Image (cartoon, rainbow, N blue to C red; front, top):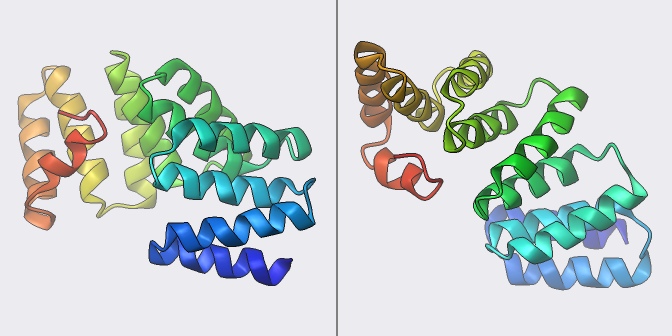
Length: 180
């Protein structure tokens, strides 16, 4: 079973999500009580934009392992993708309590704060995320948008320009997350 889940994780990283799901499904049949397997399958479903399936698997994972950071953060990402930002923030809060040094989760919570009009809180999260990942174009761009909404034109211009210098199509990429 461990070899199945390891191979599925590699498939997920490679973007071979259908192959990953085949292995995760087989692993679930072998061990239907493993929160770890459900959490990993949840992450694969989320990458496939199958958010309802992802949330179901994250719920299963958390029933077995309430402190599973992958399940909490993946469920948060899935709720955010469905524009259920208050629910996403709750999951991100718990994930951050368990592991505060994850730039991706901090940035995701920041984007949910931004989506709910909490720009000050969004900026705090983006700044914390940038301390962990100082060159992240996604986080710089997100902070730039938050600064723009807060009336900090100079800070917004600097962040957005720095992000675009790294990734010229960052605006289009971030629009998928609702960051405009």
